[in-house]
Image (tube, one colour):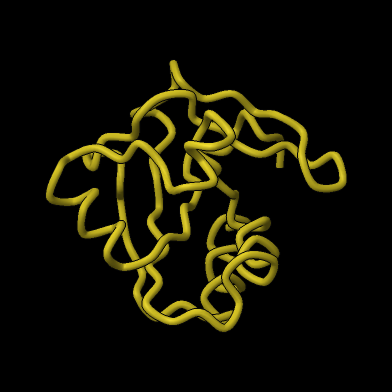
Length: 119
């Protein structure tokens, strides 16, 4: 699936950061996002690897599904791991862009999300 045809991507973050996003109405990024200057997002097929690389074994996580149509002017698809294109948001993400969230974060969740995206 070409990156530009993907309209929904995912952000993995701690529960407290998700709660802050929800209450404030905008998300400026986690520590690594702020350091890098953009918000890191993953497609459904990339999310499992992102989870395994950065979050595996952590509890208290939320996966937020983000509608890129709500931030399309701030999104750039840029190469990262192995040359894969990742969605990077150069700006804030409004909470209104969150279409779903998942609190039961494990490897099975990412397989389900990837399967849904392929449908």
